[in-house]
Image (cartoon, rainbow, N blue to C red; front, side):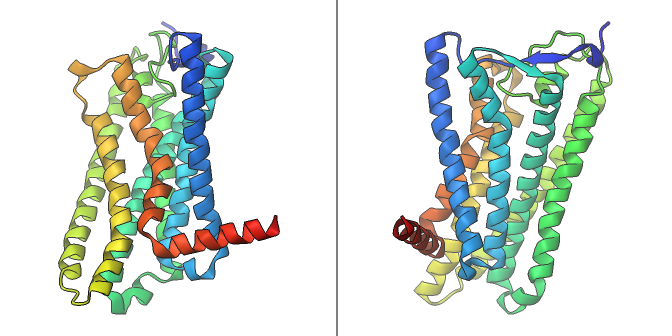
Amino acid sequence: MSNSSSVSEFLLLPFADTRELQLLHFGLFLGIYLAALLGNGLILTAVACHHRLHTPMYFFLLNLALLDLGCISTTLPKAMANALWDTRVISYEGCAAQVFFSVFFVGAEYSLLTVMAYDRYVAICKPLHYGSLVGSRACAQMAAAAWGSGFLNAVLHTATTFSLPLCQGNAVDQFFCEIPHILKLSCSDAYLREVGFIAFSFCLGAGCFLFIVLSYVQIFRAVLKIPSEQGLHKAFSTCLPHLAVVSLFVSTAMVACLKPPSISSLYLDFVVAVLYSVVPPALNPLIYSMRNQELKHALKKLFLLSSRSN
């Protein structure tokens, strides 16, 4: 029986079987990756450079953009490089790094979305106490807690997963290293320990989801009591982008987690993985910039300044 130390590399699932389709997928994902880099980079620059955006909501949005950049950069570049050079290989260390950073960024992003729901709840339901409840120190602490929870979660899952003996080969049936597919390579009952950790993380995620739902129940109750149409529009314009991002994140994650094994296939697993690891980081900047007038104004000023400098 070989153990994990005897595995020096893993074989990832290629984008396609033929060279032409591989190059086509490479071009498609390169476009998505560049769009994600541009969108999140613009949000980072706009929030950092405009003092009007130095508020708790945009501070959390800046953190979300950083996490989105990290999330999509963990999986796509290696997969695109493999498609371009017609190879499937990823080193053992590279695979462990992918698992660590993917769990880290996804976990931290979900925690941050929960914090952002709290921020919107306080801003709309307790506006007079907003400065004291969501001050600069509280924002830094909540953001640090979100990043820290993702880090601890990633350390726990990565250490447990890669301590398992592997004797079912080294072919990972996904275009990046993913814990469930690595567990399939295990030949020990110890994998049940990692399954237990996954179940625990799922319960924590369900708790965060319940908190977000309850927050928005209170938010919509308060919003519907706002008498002025302008105040109603402003409240919805700050809440709907966050709600859309949460819906996209949770729905894609639920499809991945709750997909019945009976309908599992390599192609379906590939599509589901793209949905939750690639689509949200690319679409989140677009979602936030569509209805947010302050962000639109900051981006316009950014483009005007750059055009004048040229």
